[in-house]
Length: 130
Image 1 (cartoon, helix red, strand yellow):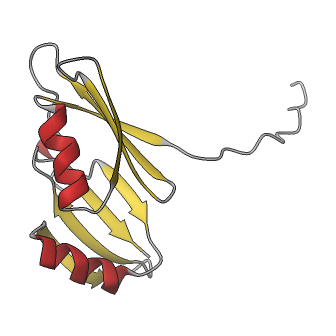
Image 2: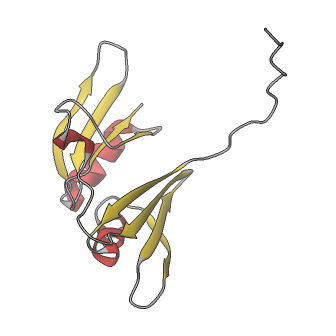
C-alpha cells in the first residue's frame, strides 16, 4: 500500500447551504432573531443569500421546486447544523429575548458540551454548543 502524503493544508472555515422557499425571509430571520450579519443577496429578486456571525457562515439558496426537508424529518435525533460558541448562557439569553424557537436547553450532555437547540423559520434544527 502506498504511503499517504503528509496533509499540511489547514481547513479555515465552512459554510452550510440550506435550500429554502424564501431566501430574504430566511436571511432576515437569521439577522433579526439569531444575530447574524447579512452579507449579501444575489440576483433580483434574490435567489441566494449569505449570513455570518464570527466564523460561522450560512448560505441560503432558493428552491427550484420542492423544498429540501431538514434532517430531523428523516431522523428524529438529528440536526442540520452544529455551531460552537464561547458563551452558551449569553447566547441563550440573547436568543430568548429575540424570540428564537428554542426547543431544548441549555442542557449539559454526557459528552460535556452544553447545548441549545433551536428550530429556525424553515424547520431546520441548529445546535449551538460550548
